Amino acid sequence: MEYRKLGNTGLDVSVIGMGCEGFAEEGCAMAEKLFDAAERLGINYFDLYASDPAMRAAVGRALKGRRDKFVIQSHICSVWKDGQYMRTRKLSEVREGFEEMMSLLGVDSIEVGMIHYCDSMKDWEAIVDGGVLDYARQLKASGRIKHIGLSSHNPLVAERAVKEGGIEVLMFSINPCYDLQPASENVEDIWDEKNYEGHLTNMDPDRERLYETCQSMGVGITVMKPYGGGDLLNAELSPAGAALTVDQCLHYALTRPAVAVALAGARSVEQLEEAAAYCDKSDEEKDYAEALASFPRISWKGHCMYCSHCEPCPMHIDIANVTKFLNLAKAQGFLPETVREHYAVLEHHASECVKCGSCESRCPFGVSIRENMDEAVKIFGR
Image (cartoon, rainbow, N blue to C red; front, top):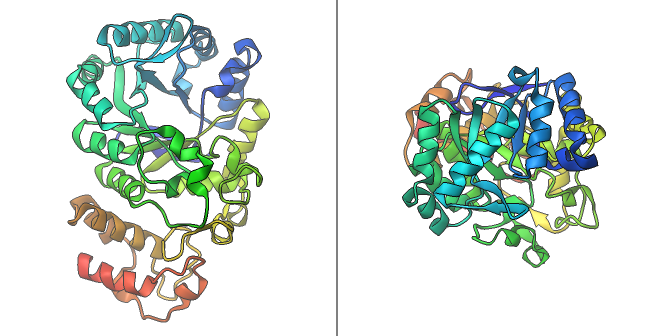
């Protein structure tokens, strides 16, 4: 298993995490089986958005005796009412739901308290003005949650929350098809087939800016829906008109800026093992670039995907990272100190480019790499 830092939290997390969908299988008996497998595979991160008391209690039993083996990302504002899940911003219900969750899990604290499912500006304002964000801050101050998170499918809302709200971890939906969709306050738009008709071109700039903003601010991203609910694994269902593999989907998510964890919605031990096997796969098996470049309905022409097909560079420039830092600076509209320092420690810089063009001949997306190198020199001074 591979591990990364989760933004600026200081937490070391496995790049493959568990979504909670499978915990309810077999009358919630699958929860313990999945936690057994996760411990064996080195997976230490899981998300718990569901509020079903039976599922939460099953997770609590599965954690018993090995709490220190796992980093918990669990959701504030996801509650169980009248026998069903409900999202709430009513502070009394939020408090009651949190206390019930902690009791059922049998823990004193969780690492990430995730404010649940915020996809509209009006809802974010309700979180701020209605006391939910203040409540999360109180929980952090008391040590009951270590870090404040937010889950969202809307890049504009997520970016605003990251910039305004002290959000340390963002749970966001990332895969090659969702990244083409512009911001919407209706989450159904993400997988509405009508929005993929015709020929789609290039990543939505709001989503790209969100990832780069998170990286520059030290906000770690945990990825939900890396397989698009499974559609991307099936050529008949995929909006792209072609299928990707599990490894390609995971690698795409894990190569976006700021991403630390891809949450696999495994419903069986075998599916979790398949996701964890990503870490042992070859670069060729993980490679998504040629697949994306050949999609019949989608084009990323001219857009850097940080896939490193452009390398090796005869001058040993790390082209993907130079481009990533360039995009981070452009997204901010100025040169953040952290980006400047990360660029500075690269062994080789854009100024060393000899304009041979070999990188561009290998790029599946037709990126103007030499122009990017010139722009990086202007911004970074070398």
